[in-house]
Image 1: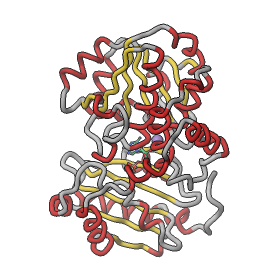
Image 2: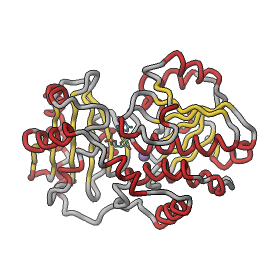
Image 3: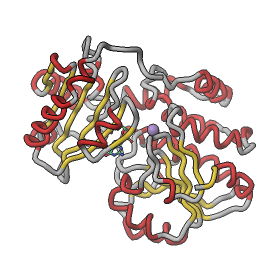
Length: 343
Ligand code: 5GP
Ligand code: MN
């Protein structure tokens, strides 16, 4: 993989470009993709954003989201566009498997794949150019860096700012996590100069749920949360019935895993959801318990040091039993005296 700077001189030649991100894109994945889209179209590139799957309804306010192609929903159309593409930007993921059913297609394409991502352990041979930086708050921040470093700061407009702000706001837990650097705040100042209404973005994302989602959270916290104080660990296991009863849609379970982390002393919070095809895990930690390694080792996953995800093909009951077993195996590091938060 060549350094991302190597493509800066090539940006002036208009091309057919696809931008894609991980399956079930969150606000950073969708925000970074659409932020890059609104930049590249100013350079007259022919750009299409393709999402591997559907996404949460509350991302639809983002400018350009109505033009995003859903690979699962309109596969022929998406494959046609991919066949024509000269460049494919891969944002907010670093192994093709994270694009689910789109992965074989992405792999087979004879195109220039470009990586911009902040997760650990990138599969660099897959990409012709790229940048992978785990110290970055979000992929959205990396898109801002890309635009500015390439010499196009004057092309940061309101659309770019709105999309990137959504990504950095959500990935930093509203500017709370350690990766929220001075550079992040300087970037936000630039967005404000572009006329960004940050309150509106916050409302679009956090004050835009249906009643059922709040009732669902109540139900889950009352009936589905187990605390293992001896391991400083909390677990939420959500059944198919729960999802049906509360009509839970894509994105509705996002952020749930953070509730148990707010309990004094809890260092590891996990949530597992019984989806149709698999059991999907999310892990969060405080301090020096590394959930990226944990997810990789036990649950076919990965992510960041303090936030990761994974999956299991076992039944909900069996994967929960396995979780308790591996928590027991990791008792020593979970019980360690809480040291300072990783930065
Ligand atoms: P979340 O729990 O919010 O779905 O994901 C937390 C972080 O872990 C995100 O940065 C996400 O991209 C990553 N992640 C989630 N699931 C997986 C997975 O199955 N594999 C890998 N490698 N990363 C994941
Ligand atoms: Mn991200």
